Image (cartoon, rainbow, N blue to C red; front, side, top):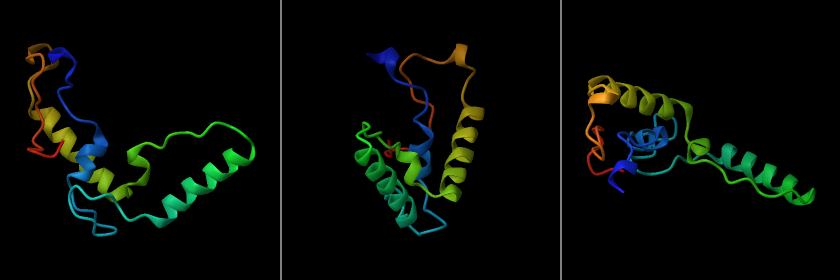
Length: 101
């Protein structure tokens, strides 16, 4: 439905639109974060041993903090330039990401 389209993509999409200053991953490429991946794997192993259901990780959990900060700043710039929520057209996107969605 047209009204279900958010005016802005989620913050992790903005973060992925930037190059990572920590690991050098290019725009659109996930971060190389072996310690974050190992932490997630460790938690998944503990949950399996205790027979608890697995928790789905959120994409932002494997993105470096500096990249998330750059994405958050980009999102805030877009929000400040967009019309007020009551003046927005339903179904229209107000982001400046171009083709990266």
